[in-house]
Image (cartoon, rainbow, N blue to C red; front, side, top):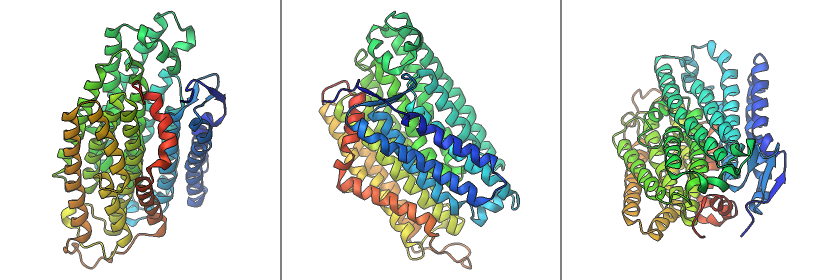
Length: 507
């Protein structure tokens, strides 16, 4: 077993968030320089995060943590997993957005000529959104973790309301209000942990702020205080992660945001919030074993409520939003177990869902781009006119439902086995049931939109496949779903280190 306490000084943790932050600032400063300038920095800034994630791999896979500025910034296997996912999904989203934001429907909704003036705002906020997510994953300061999560709320809230019409403003207001109130609970939990760690007398000054140091003194914190802190953290970070019953913001935000932003919200933002929850709550796993049953029950409730809410949805984006609520439940169940197998399965599903849901939202965005429609009842017969989009959506639908040999099957099966290993058969049965319902929801939507013999309203509209700049990222994500399903061992070295960070029960 590698030494999880070994550290190496590196500038990579700081570069992970400063690169996109600087790129975003350059976009705002050069807002009069034209689309090519904005788009180039958007792609380069997001790709820099992916590159930094790749460069981190050799050290973290070897079991060493990268630290900067003392230990204010620290990247271990868990942090590197999230940075890599944010970078990869962010890069593909930036590429996808180049053609998506040029569609006539979006330009018309933005007010015609005003659209060109709004585009640098879109790309600048996109980069700052990615930067704030990366910042949250590399900080080792428990208060700065809250600040970073709140920063993602501000950047993404402006993007949710980007269309600036009644529907978008209502969704943005609801998003900002609910998440700001929810995240305030997380602040109280973080402050409580800091104060309790400092009160133990084992940590001096700034050390009590460092998550890696607080973990060592967690057993000294009174159980009642720890439980109160956990309750605040679950409400706060759980709201951001879309965990039921704190999820009401999620369907409206996903539905009204521009599709590239929906990709980031569902693909990586709620994962970053789940990371913050796991990073903080796992501190108390050894001293509060009763947390296991609570978190598993919360995860099961989330996965069932989310998929039941998705069943009657006719709006494709709202359907995917409720599906995201359900799928985050698998992550909570796996990580909540605290066992190595559970943490491995939960984090594997976190990675898989990032790719799957990004793929599905991009496919739905392609349908909207080509048809201007997103209601299932108004769509049909698109497989012949949009074969690449149809194939990508089907791959994503089967993967998220846990159909072998795709990646969703591998991670869900790992969670099922972890639950069985822990003797929580009731939770395993509920998780399988949620998987079956997901299959019904997603395959039914795929058949209705792409293979049902029903013409589109307005037969004069010519529907064709989307440009290469949109289908190429989808094909890349679809390939990742297949490759990680057939060769899951490719992700093992990083997932092994990430799971070891959280696991408190043997491997």
